Length: 602
Image 1 (cartoon, rainbow, N blue to C red):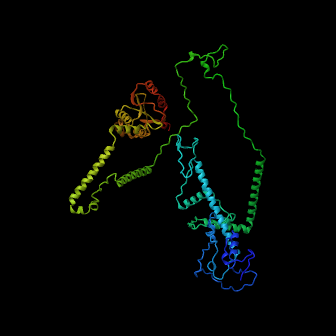
Image 2: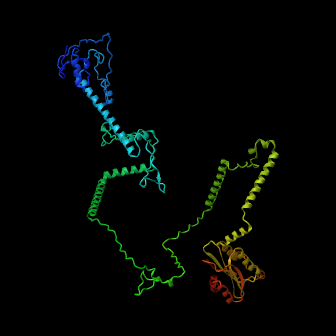
Image 3: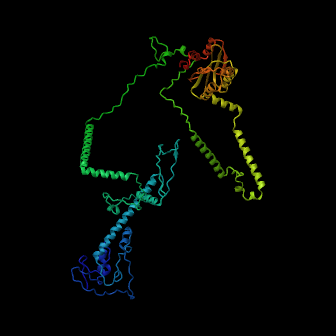
């Protein structure tokens, strides 16, 4: 039953089939020591025979020996090589009948191959541990070089700040500060920890894994897990009609052969554009590159004496003023010269914003919006508790709706209280209006400003010629209305020569005064009695010209010629001219002298 193994040259017993291939000498020694226990090794080429039942070995007490645990390939890969006992790896002889099913034989070549694979895995694990130890030693070495011993915690570095609050290192250089992004998601935190660990250990990606099977040249359409929600696409009115018209036109052109001509034209235009681009590129290449040389400005030599110091120096014996000559003390005075400031003409003055004039509708809308804002502000204060809510506004109209049962119980008392509240609200309203009302003096000034219109850039002027000022009523109306409208000017009464009125003022006052002089004053009041006497005469004559008050000139001047209003009586024309000449308004008398009514020419 003994079999000879060609590899070892000795008989092999079944218990030594799993011996460690790395220590072949020990295996041979054990084989030589116990040659009596043998096992037939099946030859591959020999014909297979039916296996015979094995004898089971028993100890002296007739019990079967305990089965030794067989280590797997993963256990061998994870076990370190340094200081590992042979028994720890499970490479001791396996008792027959326990390590394998009864009647089965173990092939030594398969066992050796498995042992080699386990050895390679173990070597890889040892190399991985050695790299970890090297990295840890390097970190400890950096700690010692940083100023603290191994096994001690690193000492805190002194914080040095400059006057601007920037951090400085030991050499006094500013430490650059980079913005630190802090991740809050657990996924990002774990990813940062992994990257930090790999950076410390100095690991690099092996070619193995999923990345080795990824081809970046292949284009893959990435589909998101969630499909995008399709939104409405509204078609504008007439879009489909235009599309239909284009399709019809295209079919018609194709039938007539016009589309081919258009295609040829388009191709020719594209070819022309390409040729032009090529020509431009060639011209650019042909043009030499110009070198930009810096301009060197010629500096004048520094003079021995500056021009502003020359007047204060004495001349030397050669008639020259140099730096080493004496200072002329006579020309030094206690007066300081202040140069005239030069106004910069290049800067343009910002134009004043024109005042915006709103229409009555816009003014009403603006007033309504402002009132709404004030009301909303009061409501917000009431909601926040800053103001007390006002009592309910009870009126005779909403008496029953607001009070309800109380009004039914005692209607007379409730009605009396409601009327008192209404009267109280009316009095408060009048008091508020009176408080807002301006004092008499301010009211008078405001009215004056309105009539004078001093804010207007120009002033309007009226010049009247009056036939007769003998009636005191007419003179009183002319004088008082001019004062009330705050007009400036004069009324010159020159009996036998001419009577003239010149007024200056704003557009509103001038409009009122013109209406007074032409329409309101009845210049023919004294002639009423004379007209009654002439009623008996039946003679028909032409209508008389109304020349009692005539507007000679109406216009606009830049500034006023008169400071106030005055009525003056003069005896002759030189006095009237002198009066107007003192106020640079003599040309008004010239207008009066040259005036001729155009109705006389009809």
